[in-house]
Amino acid sequence: MLKMKPFRETPGLCGSASLKMVLDYWGVRVSEAETVRKAGASKEKGTTKEGLLKAAKHFGFRVSSKEKSSLADLKYFIKRKIPVIVDWFSEDEGHYSIVVGLDKKNIWLMDPELPGKRKMSREKFLRVWFDFPGKFIKNPKDLILRLMLVVTPYEK
Image: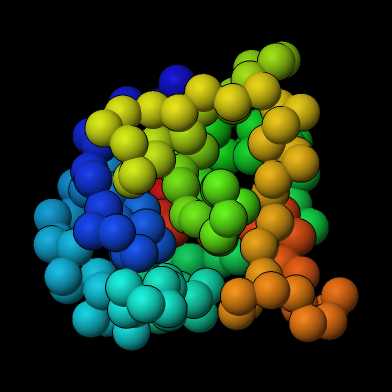
């Protein structure tokens, strides 16, 4: 299990808050407001994958993203002590959190919506590991399936 300091998001800014926590994990202290500005995020529309990648690069980090990821992909990074930002469907909207642990039955997320970690069964997580832009799915091509973002310092 990765040790990460929790941070509570400003409602609607889970992506920026997740990026802030990952940067903090790597020893770079930035405010949520800074990540919001650099990612072009808003409380109304949230944060795009592209915005998060742009912001992470601005702060001097190497970034990669992958759709149609697997639990094996997550495990690969967690074993190497690298946190992974995931985009999943919480309640009735897309939500970003950080995978900090994984075992045979459960996944642990550092969720900026909560004061600490969220534990979820692998099965449930796989059911909700998707998102889509807008208020509803207009076209099946709009589905964002199993997106993960990896943000690392260049020397890692």
